[in-house]
Length: 172
Image (cartoon, rainbow, N blue to C red; front, side, top):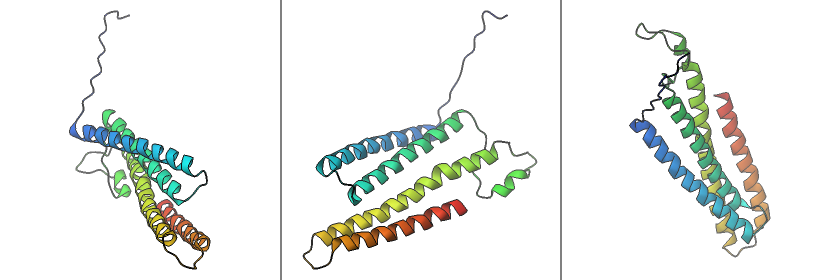
C-alpha cells in the first residue's frame, strides 16, 4: 500500500480550447438574451406566434452550439487523438504506416452530430426570420388580404422546408 503517492493531473489548454471556451461564453450570453426576450414577448402576448418561435429557435441554436463546444473541449482535454475526416471509409485503413486509432469512428460521428445539426437549425432560423419579416410587412400595410390565410400558407411551407432539411440531414 502506497501512503505517499502523489497523483497530479495536468490539463493543458491550447489556443483551440481557449477559443472554444470564449465562443461558448458568447453563445451563453446570447442564450441568456434570447431567454429574456422570450419572457418579455410572453408577458406582452401569451399566444404563440412567429416572433416567439424565432426567439426559441435562436435559443435552441445557442444551446446546441454550447453543447457542441463543450463536447469538443472534453474530447480535446481527454486527448482523443483523432482528426476530422470527410471520408469515414478511410478510417479502417492505415495511413502512412500508422494504424488509425479506435476513437476515429466515434470522433467522426460525434463531429457530424455536434456541428451539422446546429447548422441546419441556423438555416431554419434564417428562413423563419424571413417569415417574420414577411408577416410584419403584411401587417403594416392596408389591404384586403387575409393575414390568417397567409400565415397558414407560410407555416405549411416552413414545415415542408424543415422536413426536407432534416430528412436530408438524416439521409446524409
